[in-house]
Length: 210
Image (cartoon, rainbow, N blue to C red; front, top):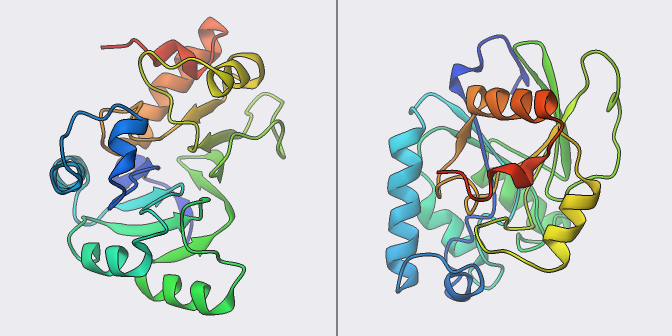
């Protein structure tokens, strides 16, 4: 797959869906009683947001490691778009060749880190927020997208503190907890990151955004 897009209207980003992970509802205060309700809501939100011919970059923790490949296989074909996985800590360990081969059969691409270009904007993606990255400064800095920290209303503690102290205006968390439990489009990201740059704030600005 070519990762240089001249049209950003069919490019989407998400992370930390945690399909099949019952305890994520309690850990992140997600508004469902059962994992079946949770998973179906995330599938519905995804398909309401993403066109069938889109590309979705999933920045890790697609499903819980206990469910692993069976959960991923069950979802294959149910979610719109070609899905490219940037592996997270709850995904099958890609350091094991047998896991990587299986994941490559289930996703359009599998990476630990990936840089793309959309409408002339360079974007580097990792499951984790980075302290620095290539072309982080300059007139047209590269964005860094991440997941993992599950930013959401009411969050306190180390993750929020680290983001507050370290995240730059050109970074954004694409996790479902921050983004209405659905993927975020390139153009939505563009609006938010442009706002962060203009107002010299970071992704924490959106915690209480309605």
